[in-house]
Length: 245
Ligand SMILES: CCCCCCc1ccc(S(N)(=O)=O)cc1
Ligand SMILES: [Zn+2]
Image 1 (cartoon, rainbow, N blue to C red):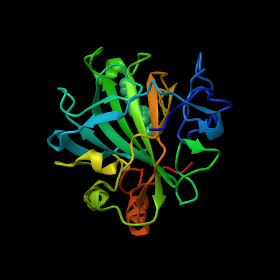
Image 2: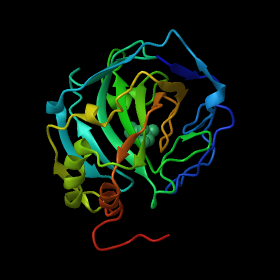
Image 3: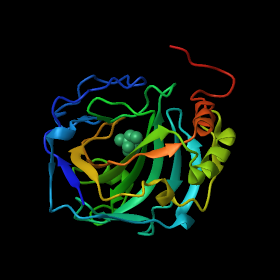
Image 4: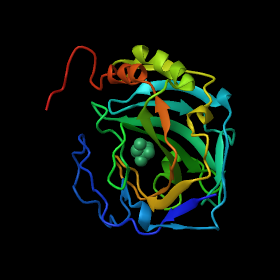
């Protein structure tokens, strides 16, 4: 098992988020995400445990287009879809997952590996249900969230993802929501979840709170070119109008 802890974030790429209108520097922002993971600087940590995910597909509720991405939301009113182990001391509840894509395969991921960008990155967002009772509460706390990051590459078709891709035409415009059930997010994890980098960081979009234990998978998953094209069809503006810059 090669669970590496990213010891020094190093000079991270404080990427300007295209929609980011707020202050450019977050007060006390000394653990901002995303970062460039400098592989040779990561330190093996034998204390790290294997990740333990226990997801119940019956907690899957809906998929919606929030204008920045599309996200799949889970019922997080009980410990039914959980994450523990790895660098975590507590149990964390899955509340949603979403992706970060570019407009082309050339870029899209938020984290980089030795400055290498991937076409997309999946984020599975969990909050500390041992310590807090709501996501909105946990998001403000230092040990409130745990996000699993998985890099995507374009290659072979991802069978599990297809159910999600088929739902995208229904949420083509900002603000649209459709019921989306019985989706097991474990199918989006790489086969090897023992090798990962972990560090204490922040949300990568507003409110950028420094409440995230990041767990970035070493192994990427593959999706097909056709599946990526379906994602590019999702528009992040309201029906009928394009809010140009
Ligand atoms: C009180 C509302 C807080 C909404 C926070 C929404 C959010 C979730 C995850 C991520 S990410 N990309 O770091 O996984 C960014 C933002
Ligand atoms: Zn994200």
